[in-house]
Amino acid sequence: MFDDIRPFTDAEISAAMQRMADHPLFPKVCGWLFPERPAEQVAAAVRGCRTAEEFQLRFMLPVVESIVEKTTDGVTCTGLEKLDPGMRYLFVSNHRDIALDAAIFQVLLTRGGHRTSEISFGANLMAGDFVIDFGKSNKMYRVERPDTVSSPRAFLDASRRLSAYIRDTVTRKGESVWIAQRNGRTKDGRDFTDQGIIKMFGMSGKGDQASNLADLHIVPLSVSYEWEPCELGKAVERYCIRHHGSYAKQPGEDLASILDGVMRPKGRVAFHVGAPVTREDLAPFAGLPHNRFNKKVCDLLDGRIRPAFRLYPNNYVAADLISGQPLHADRYAEADVRRFQGHLDEILSGLPALLRDEPGAPEEIRMLLTDTYAAPVLQTL
Image (cartoon, rainbow, N blue to C red):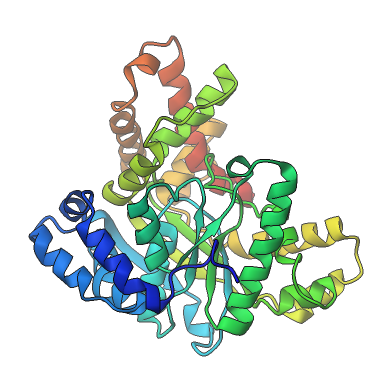
């Protein structure tokens, strides 16, 4: 019924494992993810997987745990213990890293006694046989974006179909779902829930708009990184849009962003699982016009995601650099200021030569980087 959207079924996993292990890209991927193991040894383990859960437990979860160990200063999670492992949920998360936001959360779910969730995967990223096999074997489902369909009407039809798929997955198939609160990652450090996401959730269901959402067991999820993933690329994109009117991605840029997010140091990482959205939460909005209802639900989710964002000393340093006043000086030491400035120096050393030589560009991109770190503090004021 949803063959164009859904992940692979267990009956399809074995063939997908064979295709991945035989693909020319496999040795290179093994070199990134398992540098200490021969590629053929990893290929043999992959070929032996018969279900999506087996692939995740034997292959993906150890990979993500290794990434966490090598590139973070620890991952914490609060709130997950309040959820029922026997229930299925729709996790609506802020979005900072293309792959790791959801990937690390799968590890946390497993450690907490929950099944892993299905994960939204943008159609723009589903390019090439290897990536498709890898994603759909890892419980990823396809999400169309406005730029991956032929018309606004086609996007509306795709949204209706996605809504029906998510509802079927949570309420009938018995799988939890992870989805970002907006289309794409935040590029400026400001987290907000897009009304279009809430509208999409409500396109399916047979009850009133409040009941339709309550049936999905929506759980707000907040993730914060001490060092923003892919920060230079995000700042460059903002700069180009501001000064050149647009930003054109280069071929392979999405894959490069995934690898950058995976490999670069992330410092401390914190997840917070918020309280599920209940019928009682939604009851005061019942009967509102659709646009106002959707806005109220967005505000409800934002009110549980933003305050849970873990603020680090560099966020407070950046906020004071933006304001020019030591408003948060009690939250950091002088060593934190030096560390933050040194971090920006290191990041900007990777600025493309074309921008490095453009008058004023390095200074403005540095300010955009600072703004990204300041944004979570400024949003909570």
